[in-house]
Image (cartoon, rainbow, N blue to C red; front, side, top):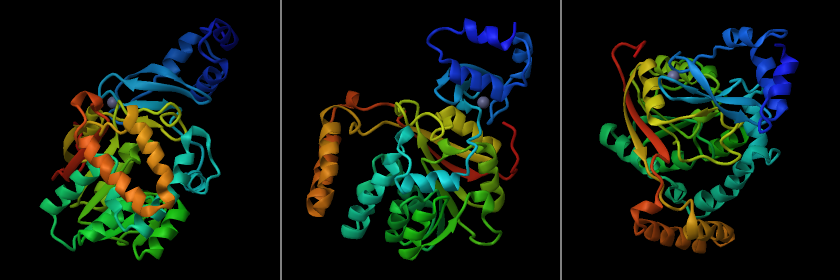
Length: 344
Ligand SMILES: [Zn+2]
């Protein structure tokens, strides 16, 4: 059976375009279906186990799921675009597909939260941020160097500074690197692999909501383990219930994490992690979501914005447990193992 016949027999709900992209990108045409099964065995990028088709990723290919560590990842797992260009365009408002206009909107939120109010914790939309700060304060003395990879607009850098940590950042988008440097932070522009040896010697490394962007997360974690061999590591990722209609697809999202997959990746990179599934606050749905969207429009009146945020926090604490979604965020707090190259 040749490729043309495969397309002709494709179920009607599968668009031919992505199917063609998936087959052509994965396999070398011409080939038969039997050949494709052999040639297209796609291994999990975290544990190397077999994977199965999960769903079509429109205009891209598909999402696959690992039969062992349960990681879900886009296939093909290459963006084909320098992340420096993609995320710079997003912060400058040049990309609106894939819900990437979020990035531009955050620039305005930053102006209110940091420049006008000076309260970085108003940004903390999940308890993960506060839990990482508490963990840092328990394990590292004031003055310790904390490197934030993917520091974005600097909300967490400012929170670290307020807690007397030496906050250092890294980001691929030039716009946010410039903003943070103007605020006096030492910030590297580029992916972690481009960091020069000795540029920073962190006591601990943190990264929030950026692991889903990576083409090779295991290599990323191993690079951190090698560059900062004694440093602890705190990672927060979007959990299985935190899935956006557009945002959870490529090119923005290449990997969908869960607690098992994240723990597996960290162990294989040479860390011993504690992994926690965190529920949502309840602000993402129902009337609280409506109030939150309305509140976002008060950003031009900073005191009103702050008041609204504080009221929201009180309301959220009183919501019934079933208003929250389990596994909305996955948080890993990890320490390096003595043996850097684990195979578990
Ligand atoms: Zn796996």
